[in-house]
Image 1 (tube, helix red, strand yellow):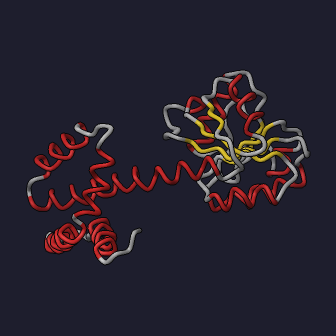
Image 2 (cartoon, one colour):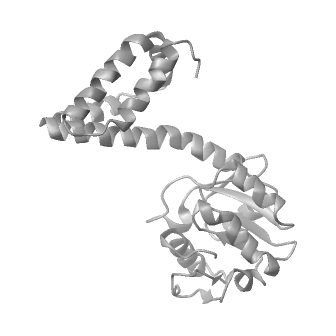
Image 3 (cartoon, rainbow, N blue to C red):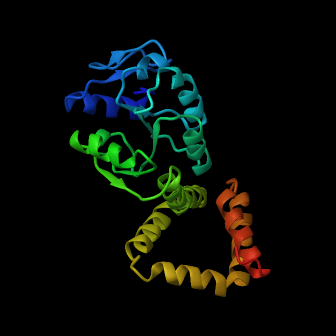
Length: 249
């Protein structure tokens, strides 16, 4: 295990509980019960069959570079970071080890090793075999490293964007004194989503882009009047204005 922060720590503990022989390194975290502490990345991976790199996306390539002196060609290097597809592809070019792109498809806290994992890359099948035997939930997505994280990040545009819009709208509603009303309204709308919702959202957005761009300009102006910076409202206006002006997006 490279990285023993919140996610890495939970996964490491579950691996130990499942009977795995786990060695770990983290420059900040002092250690995890049951995990043999190593002095650096290269030391941590020198006798490993499988390496789990659970760092920040900014450290994905650095962790591999530092570990490379200790890697064997038959070691499976699993990158669990939310790095871009390009970064995942760069990992493949940086080592002879089998690289696995692991996309964690839900938050790790509370789930640990049971966190659903979508994996791709040359080492994906081997990763699924080893981790599945220890109790992990792994789905192999055919394709090179970068394929799995690409799907997660595309989903994040929707899911994290939705969360940001709800946070911003509720901040405005709180300032306007109607937060409970808006929360109930949002909940009712989300509960009403069905298999036709996406078609209605896409078609309506394109068909009514002009009117909706004006509406979002007004919404952004109101948020400013309420003392809330309209970040998602402005982004929505800009997309609608582009569609209005003939940009297909």
